[in-house]
Image 1 (cartoon, rainbow, N blue to C red):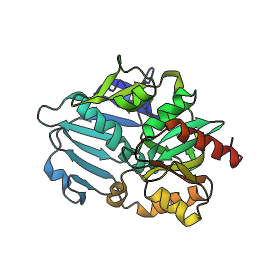
Image 2: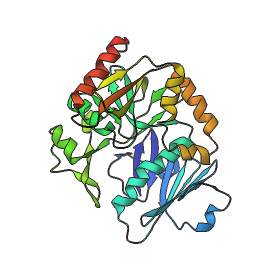
Image 3: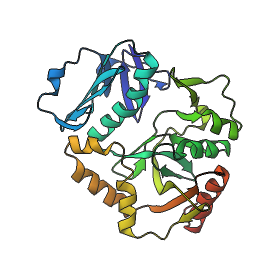
Image 4: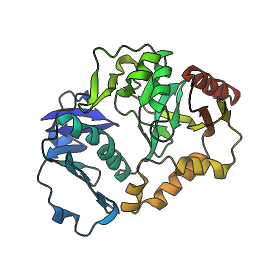
Length: 303
């Protein structure tokens, strides 16, 4: 049995997850979350609502099938059961344990979960959200190269006090962006065997392992003009920004938690600064993006 910590949870697992920090002197009886291999039958979908081609759920359960990789059963914010399918590799299974399954656990536990990276700035943090491939991890890596500490790469969990909580001490970075930022990928492991151009970069002492208040949320998007920032958004636009960047919104549907998500977004809107950061499709300067964020935070008196 392996013992870890992630998202302030103590984890016991029969599956090795080297990306996580170890839990010294851990024991199964004191674990908040248990990960174990087991048989998951199709009959366990019974009574669950289908909210996607391979996704079923209710208030306490998420049943997820990843074809040719694994089935996962996530229950009550406390348990993840996995069953490998075919000849799937451990690194393939681990990708979904650390992403989709932990995301479900966090939502079941009542966190507001955003699709974004989190950077410690001053005595608080900023969350950079946006759709996949828009450049969140690259921006996070650029902050790290400038000396900032990171808290999350892809899944940001925010508690009832408006604090982001520390996640997985690594970022996922593709080869082109690593080269751009002069990060040597020679000794890094790839995220999956079938994806030889995306690497797992351990954060080491550039990982912040304590809760921090969220100062601001920036939405990163692509458009046809020059890089710009729009910070004069109204409250309705703030809410829409958060709502479209919720992590796995189908989970909220399956768990009957859409009302909770609405309330959590509304509370955050009233307490943090928000802005849209738009970049061109090509010829992107990640350092320009970083500078725009820092200057905007200064203009708002947040740093």
